[in-house]
Length: 295
Ligand code: GUN
Image 1 (cartoon, rainbow, N blue to C red):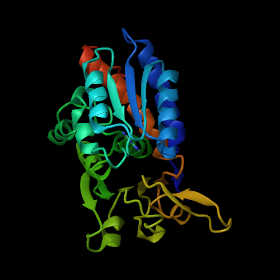
Image 2: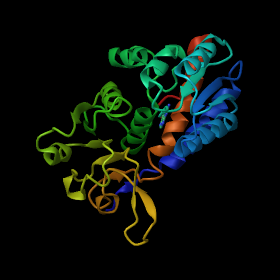
Image 3: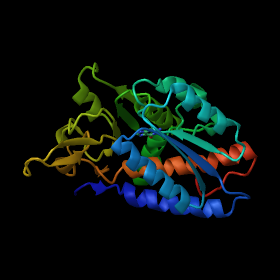
């Protein structure tokens, strides 16, 4: 039987609907502030979508669009201003930042209670210690999709391929929180194929196009492909297309369920960012957390 396609686009749309309902029932509108520096085309598209969905789910959007040559001090001044602004619940600084600005310094200025990307040291520490806090969006979306496909995750062997700060490491902590037995595999892992072959759940986040082959997978595995790689089109000269870290088509014959690229994990990132904005507002303003946003 071919694998079930995990429709992240549909799941994300459903989550946004739930967020919109939750927002309607809150005492006040949550606010997300977005800081975009420069003209990176991909970043501009992300930010446009973030703003669109913030408004569509009934929240307030604040935008700071800054020139490419803005100083680090000015970006930090704006972040501090947003920290101090009681009407702002979430702060997102779109990455990457131009080379002359330290991403680390800017991110660390975000107040942890407004850190809707879950990227500050405090957020990482809270996750690692199992304390309440804001969790990174793409890893959270990955857990949601795995849970939707499999139901209970407890006791499953989960292999995370990749150890990035943005995805791999936090994903490992989040699947551990779901009582999975977690293995983090990476470029130095011995017998990578054997390790992947033991996975009930595989989270591929290495950024290497179609690196994981269909015959590496355990029969019936749940495959969460976080990779978004642009590669030359094999049949259309001069054209490119997107592929994941897993060789999708042949894997439909071995996996039990699998996310496509695009349309899998990708749409979950923004939906989880909106969810974090609601959670941040609830935590900071002492409101009850909506019960339709748990997973
Ligand atoms: N750039 C690409 N993805 C992301 C993301 O999830 N958050 C931020 N802040 N920047 C990004």
